Amino acid sequence: MVSRLVHWCSICGRQKGATNHWFMAILDKPKNLKIIKKWRESKACEPHTLTICGEQCAHTLLSRWLSGELRLEAQSEEGTVNESCVAQQQ
Ligand SMILES: [Zn+2]
Image 1 (cartoon, rainbow, N blue to C red):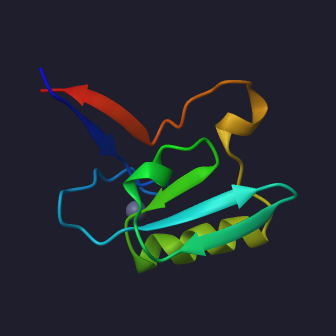
Image 2: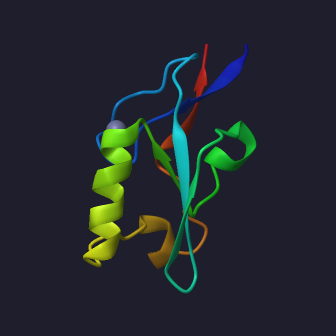
């Protein structure tokens, strides 16, 4: 059985398809937000990574971050996995 990683947009919850062009954002300490244009599968599941489906959600992310609304669940609990990234059995 093969398992494949499934990603969801951290903002709108849309599921990532195989060929979509998505962005990633990393919210690291102390509250720095980095937006990464190039999708990297290996980074997408890290606890501080947000997965972004497109420009619209990148704007939403930015305004949430600027207003201080943006929180990552992973930061509050130790060892929490990134919920936008799930391994699915096929
Ligand atoms: Zn989205």
